[in-house]
Length: 239
Length: 239
DNA sequence: CAATGTCGAATGGTTTAACCATTGGCATAG
DNA sequence: CTATGCCAATGGTTAAACCATTCGACATTG
Image (cartoon, rainbow over all chains, first blue to last red; front, side):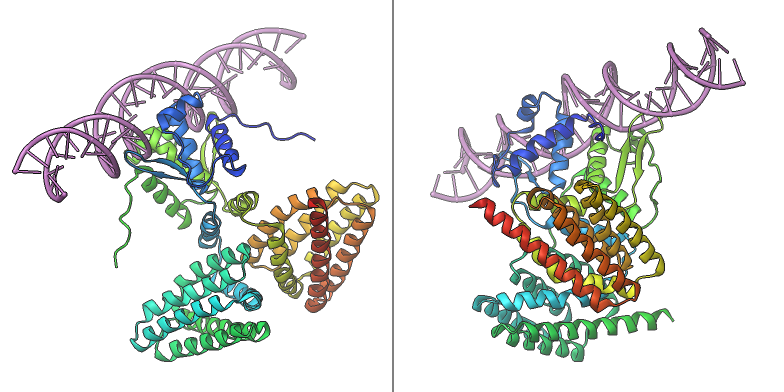
């Protein structure tokens, strides 16, 4: 019947006005807002209050604030970063275990790769091959740290290949957060890295011919195998 | 080689300290932080700066601020709200279309229901049946608005049944945002509501016997059917 | 005694005015 | 022309005061 009475906080009104202007395209990405001392007059408020509004907008990822002369608030292109960050907060605090994450990956990543394989272009394959060569170089130099970094890039890039931002930020959030566990519980070695590299090569081959079914099967096997190993390790350590 | 030099903004340091304390469980949900005038002394900063930090924490969904005597900042239980909100921003600004969301649902929701069906308890089935009866009552009273609300609750509850918070967050974020589109582009009618209700009943039957495969097939068909209809409607309207 | 009204203190919200810190351009010296 | 250093614009921070909301304590009234 009734809505909650709107709370009257001046800075919220300022946030809404600027946010609406950005969403409606009245302020495009790259536009510089006037300096604080001018904005405060326009909104007929104090600098402190205005700055609280700017903090909120910054946190929402709508503006970026630069220092110095010719600094100020600049309208940002809206991206998935705030989603990834808040999802990360949830994961880090919300009783999300490695097992939860692994289960999610096992169920979901096959489908994501399916989509990526279906939509893979020659350019995508080229990009993947470039990453493969970097990974191979790390393998040969026994540089596990950078190998893992490239591995994460690969997963993120495959997310991009879906051409669907929802998949992209889910993939990014999961991998951002799973990586910490990897480093802690599943230290790489020559054999494990080779295994990873082999899977990677197989996936590229499947992507080349847009074989969604094959690509999906490979990744699901890959994820499952690594998750099981990590789980073993964790159980073993806790004994 | 080098990391970006940390920018020196006092309020960011305050945010980090409080955020870390919350994430590490040193501050549990429900805990009240000291009043601003006391916090400012503890952090050795001014009230203005402290308040900017509180704004950021509030926006992150980590604290809630109440007015009046015995008011103040209270640590919140972290939930999916910030994810939902930032996702909504992305969608509203055109970064994510209905098509993107629908594609994601079609690929993912089957897997989620699989898991839910596998883990369904008698209590879960009872809860679903209760929701079913509410939905049926709305159907008979032609109360579409509340029907949709219950429909959303059902999807959220099925997310809960996975016993996996990652699935829960994703499900909630997607459905919160897809719902707006439903109301705008796919007004319910008697026939469509009945169709929805029938699918619901079938899923409950599958859940009762933990038939993951059947439950998954039903939901995937359901999602696909409704997404197609909505897409048709949108394409039709834009002509 | 119970319901109601009133007041005051605690706390967040806002304002003002000043100063500090960073940055980039411009003037000046070499 | 180049390099140095100064200056002004702009965000960051501080301090002190006042306003607005809330809630408990106490008084008033029936």
